[in-house]
Length: 202
Image 1 (tube, rainbow, N blue to C red):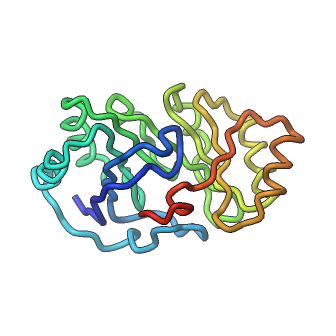
Image 2 (tube, one colour; image 1 turned 120 degrees about the vertical axis):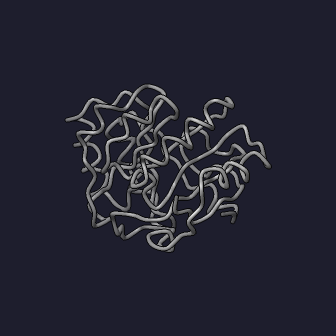
């Protein structure tokens, strides 16, 4: 597998925000989002065998692992073997994905956090995948302005989303119009800032 990084930090977003976590960041991505905060993971990476990855993981023996990228599902065949090994040890697993690749074959091992790309990102997700989101999964809209909020509202109105929904403002943007939009429209979402950027960790 092509690995960009393996590191420990606090989970900065999603339903497990604030929990100590081992991140396995896979290299390679099929999008070029305007707001990408890990552009270095789009390419490159170090080739690592499954055994080598697991050796590093077991040395730390984390209760919680987040698979992220890049877009980790580009390596879904190898990823399935990694997830199966982690799952057998009882590890809690999240997968962060950009919503362009079907993740249903991996849901037996992990909870999904699907990012739905908004207009300001310059990219687009496959919103039909929202039908595969379960109550234990989650959906994240990274929003920059009211246009993004309106787009997210339209997606929510036209697709059944069983999991929790997060509005995560682009770091450093004006949060006031976003919070106002949520309140005026009574959106069933959780407003969430990126914790890892606020406290200055990876």
